[in-house]
Image 1 (tube, helix red, strand yellow):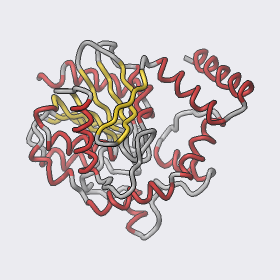
Image 2 (cartoon, rainbow, N blue to C red; image 1 turned 60 degrees about the horizontal axis):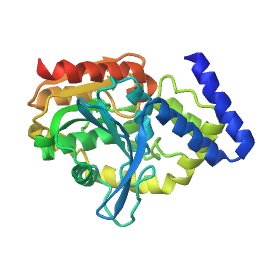
Image 3 (spheres, rainbow, N blue to C red; image 1 turned 135 degrees about the vertical axis):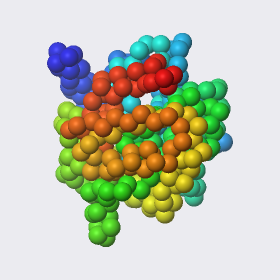
Image 4 (cartoon, rainbow, N blue to C red; image 1 turned 30 degrees about the vertical axis):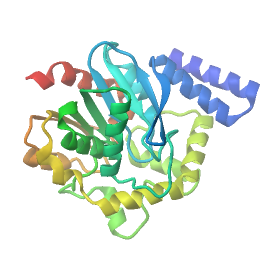
Length: 310
């Protein structure tokens, strides 16, 4: 693994020397990561929104994965690499994020995104599949399962939003005190603070990639604040729809999550009427599929092939 990483880093540096462009360097790195995960990059227009997504072909089960707030489809790239080759993986950029269109004047609530996501699945011909989501994406995946139960074979939640935690998280405490959300980045140096807040062990990023992501986060600050305000106003929308979910559910949570406290799993256990399996991961933060993609993929793999039928 270390030798592969060193090789990848050398490739990035070589391209940086030849091209001298941070943006091109970033695109080269992301392309290499997708290539190693057998992911193709595709696009489709659905109701005037241009969706960008990655897809790994497979002749078995289909898994649709939904990123969280401020994220994009590549939050699932390394995770996808560790899944069996026969699992088809589809990872879209939600409207407003990544490379997908960002129309102004429309709603970006979790409920509105779930409805758009259903239209996206119809457009690419998905009929029944497993759906996984992280944070905001988990809230969207849960709402999707509640609204469109015939399409969802199982629901997989990674530290999901949309449900009020009995124990407030560190982020909730900060926001209730009137301070700005820790999810918004004010400058390049603040990006390191966000990484420490989100992960127990932040994934290693070469300096040029970290700089690129930091600059991107700062540039998107006002736009992300606009979307976050809508989500906060929407409230704990998933919690009101838990009784409508019919699919079996796997919930995976990082015990050290500062964004959303793992006590949300207590609410799921009380209100979800379907089969529920919970996994609490020690020394893990808000996005297990990024922090430990291999372990996360193994849990999802076991669930898809064994857990949903028991």
